[in-house]
Length: 288
Image (cartoon, rainbow, N blue to C red; front, top):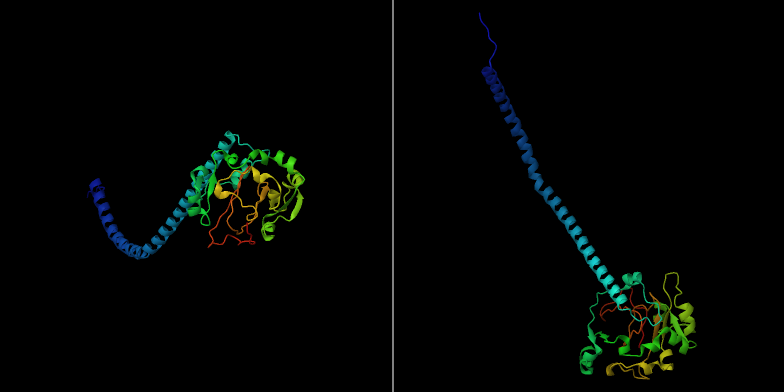
């Protein structure tokens, strides 16, 4: 009687049979699991769609934030360039304190949609037809403020020397408008320039000279050399003195046609069309 151990071929055969039998069971299990998977797949499209929408929304928000950041950075760079350009030109300050870099970056802007024209290129006929009582305009002079007045007569030193004892009215943004366009705090011009101009309230707002009596009582109107269509009509139109430190000014208000000239410093206007109410409304009604 002989016996033998199974050889490699027999082991492989048994192994194959075992796997074959196991694979049949595995096929049954696979069919069962396939049914479960198919059932799960039936619900997946809704979940997948929701996840996809969320991802798209997040991506859109991120792209929007990135675009806004790039836009703000470009504005910041433009403002820096404007500041460096002004410094390179050594702008005459007339003895007045010009805004520092931080103030310009905070309050300045190069985004302005108001039309700008050179004064020597604008005729009286075009002004009357296109702008008078119709739309705002920024009028530029090639020689700066010397193009429409004698800027030397508006320096800090000259004004204090010649008109230091004159009385001026000042106030803060809302009180001036509520007062009908009058500064109710009375002081001499010298007092305002030397002590009151930089005095701020609890909100950081300084006083602002808004006076309609000072200029007509002085000889400063003689220094004007504005275009004919801007010539002030004495007794018909009021002439104001505006003077203040950074952050001074008046709140939103309405008035008739007017022009404002900046001799020294920077001034920023916020304009709204007649059919649109500014944030917070208007504090009063003034005619100028």
